[in-house]
Image (tube, rainbow, N blue to C red; front, side):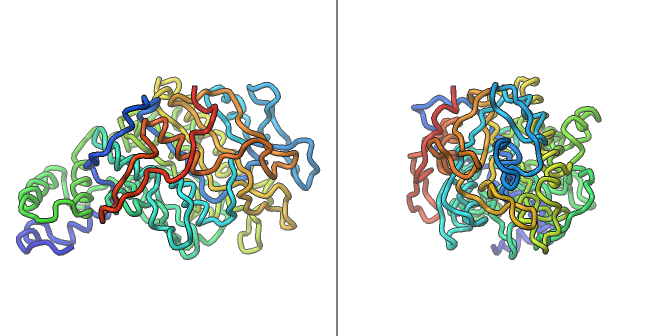
Length: 460
């Protein structure tokens, strides 16, 4: 965008780029469309636990102890708090926390392609390869309809750096709603953008506050002065709805609110609290998500997928170029399922103890499961036909399992539920009418959700 010369003299382009590099792409201006007045919302916040890459369901939430070893692998299983329901042996904490969530074992759709399936999962909209970047994420639509809250953008991604590929694709997008509804991504640019797989030793990950760092030499008072100057110029600008203008305004607002900045600071937490979640990337990201919703954030996505340090975390083919351990060994690593078990259970318990779970919908999402049969390299391949997800809090009836798969975890033997149904269930909890009409930036009408039903039995 070209700004007037007067604006360039007040805030130089290089300073604008510094502020823009904060990554804040979510607009803080709510749209006129609101929630569905005919349905009372059961949640006012969402934490989306987004593990893109295809998490193995048979080694986590849907083990088959009676199957042959080429199916079940070498892992055992553990009894959950629900009689007759067992999880994989690396999920003992989640097995003890089943009262908090509803497990869906009949997640299913017809694609084994990462990109198509990830966009489908993130948006609830079935797409073609030409539509990978055009469809808005669920979080973008929530931000569009319900706006920001408590100084936070309507859609936050922690860290928002997953880029499947190669080449890397940025699938966290506002699509046809416009760039102002992209998520605010907290973590900056990944170090290894092609995500070449490489197994490294597990290491702790301090939350990277790059997204809220002031440029060197720029204090909050100086920033506030520049904001005043910018607002003066903005009043004379013809294009007040420009997405970049929204981004810069949002960055100013977040940087100058002490309460918002404090919510992003994990050092405010005790060592015991941080240890409880696990000193891992997934653990500390889940802890940050709790801090943000507690401070008033509306929609927070925990992103733990294609990792620049560990490679393709969930795409566990164990192909020679990946250099992965065999799947039944890999799941025991602290940055794989073992760490997820600790982090997810700590999040649910923490939200419950703080009285936040009742109004916070927590959803575990991945694009598909993995093949029931272990391949010749000791890994599992893509499997859209079956997978496991869960819902917790926000009106969800916990302590139950919906759906079941066959003896090999290959296909549902109960009615299947797909990404559109997951999206419909999220919108339902927030009181959003999936049949409402949205308009893109060219004023063309689009439904909130083209197809999808609330998953029967999830909500009380």
